[in-house]
Length: 390
Ligand SMILES: Cc1ncc(COP(=O)(O)O)c(C=O)c1O
Image: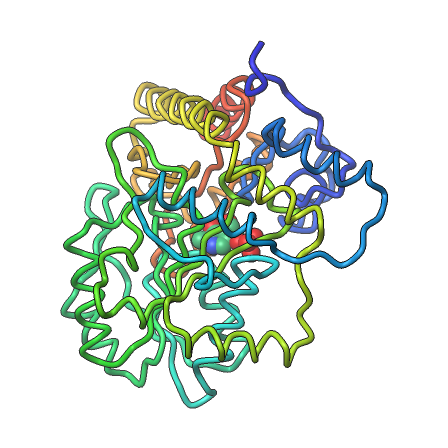
């Protein structure tokens, strides 16, 4: 049995996905609920990463640590090999996560007088963090066509002119599963440059790309505009290390880096934990074969769900995403409201998926299903979904 087929009991491990279902969904009895919601995987991390963390653990001294040049070399090597993006070690700044990194960028480069642009449906912290910081959030809802999302560039340009100072791009897109194409990225670069808007590109899902799709880091094709782009990448989504907490901000512009460093100093931000450093280095240096195997498993899981839904739930539409391990399920054809759908799933199916409204109004009528788990759990999840709608 492969590591990806083993079902690991995650209950009572302080897992948000498995142990906080009641709090999240407002229900009492949750023991028999199958969680396929928050975006972490039910797989063990790559053995090479566990071994690197074990070495750190066995050392027994857990003092302050820093992101050594070898860690930066590992990130740089990975980006070059996997995404044909040539970066420099000095462009990298480290943070405890992509969301904290987004918060730092918002706080550093905007004021409460400025607006942030996002394209819903989109990963909720983009607008939540900006909202908490009392920045106005301007939205440019994407166009959805048979499950394929695109940006309405006329609307996008108008939105950029509403006092926007920062555009937060989700690339690949969560929850839409889109890998943005070169022409779209070029248009984004052109319009943001025209209106003096900084781009923050969240590329945490960049490594989770299927079949012939290719992730193009936006900064890698930006030419002179590269200096107006901050990119966030992380080993945490790719290698299932979310709880270890590590992310990298990449900015080729020295002035941007200096401001971000000053922000970090002002907030007393220390370096990452020794475990995060060890995990990051091992993952990027040696995690490639694990990732390739993972992608096959996730791709097969997606094909299975899509096939079953086609056969048993013809009113439901799901497109295989270009990237991410998340299915974005369109149930508008059932005529059910979100409350009705969630009630059916939780109470009849005993299945926890994410309601689309979490991603903004544009997400109403959709559900997000995480299929990064052993095939037997995916089969169970599909059976529960079918039961919920019977
Ligand atoms: C687009 C996107 N950005 C960021 C994150 C979370 O990043 P972190 O855990 O590093 O804060 C997620 C997690 O699902 C995500 O989907």
